Length: 134
Image (cartoon, rainbow, N blue to C red; front, side, top):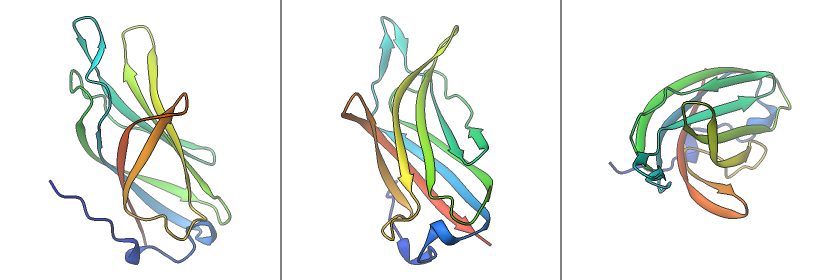
């Protein structure tokens, strides 16, 4: 599946946009396949903006590459500049952070595409995100 970045459909300044901002988690790729001995990674993605937090479904035993195609509608306030993206491995007792990324909505180059996710200073994988608004 080819994924083409198209920033042309984005407002020039997402940080100044106020209203319903839809954020779609398309897929993740490049994360670790194994979460431990005989345990494949069970990934999910968490998105946070302002006071709102959304979580995708967990993809059990999907490993480091998973398709989500889940869309969430944020009530974005004008001036909110950060979308926090976190990727976790779901475990029975707790979830392990695989990586995180703060997406700068004030950056004019921010648009649909892949975002590197980092843990302990290293890129651990990519999250593919699409933005839309009414």
